[in-house]
Length: 344
Image (cartoon, rainbow, N blue to C red; front, side, top):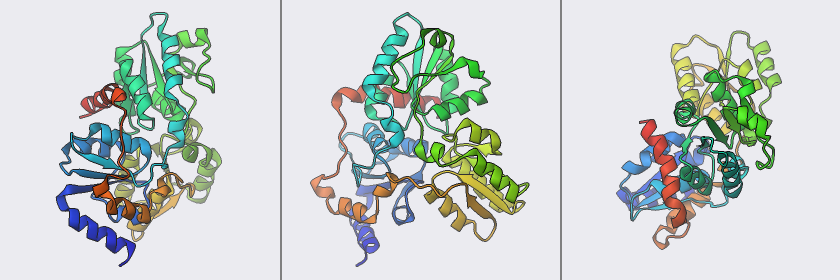
């Protein structure tokens, strides 16, 4: 039997006792076997309704951590490769975030942290203890508005690009946005005192380093009148040149809409290549979808069909289950629940 056939046989064997989740950035060899596919927000929303004892999460580690946090008692969450991490999440260490927040709040000023879901569970726990919340690219605007209603200043982490792009949507002037230093520890007290938005110096290497303004200009030169849509993890300079930016769900919906309407000959999409290629193939007979850059996430690619098969073969033993530090559970869950409650 092929690997795909063996995976399907195990899915049939476990039946309702198994649910496989997959992020949109996973390769087709994984997506072919998932029960639920979505972006970070959609997958987080679906966890509480799952009744299966075994949840296999095909994505990166911080996603599996969140799933484990939201799972019911007795449920087990598995990640096929625990080394599938996130470069952006590694740019913010919990101990550094805590030191910055302690320093900012020492004067009595109300500072609220808002953490992008691309962060470790330990960071989410720090954010939860300081009364903050988590956000995704789908609801960053809603959650940033919520955060500003709670505090004088918001510390947005770890993605400076999503923070700046969302602040731009809210009309927050650039001079009221301050990026803290590269180590995340030294703050210019005068600048920080004036800032409404403090930005952690993190980014997604795929979206920031591999998608450049000249690529957008080049597409517009070759395809005049056609749109370029990108993920808001791209730099503000790239976003400013584009015709739209939004979450993974937004990009998928825009591609579907453009294909259905048939008014455009081409559409350029700037995000992780596995998703863009899937959209290219799905709509090939109706619109020419072009990737802004053929950039794929090496961490997402670590979860492949052989590792998924190995995880399913070892479900009974519990090998590969994601465990969460008990001391972190309550505050980390608080940060996630504040997002879910405000974005129902």
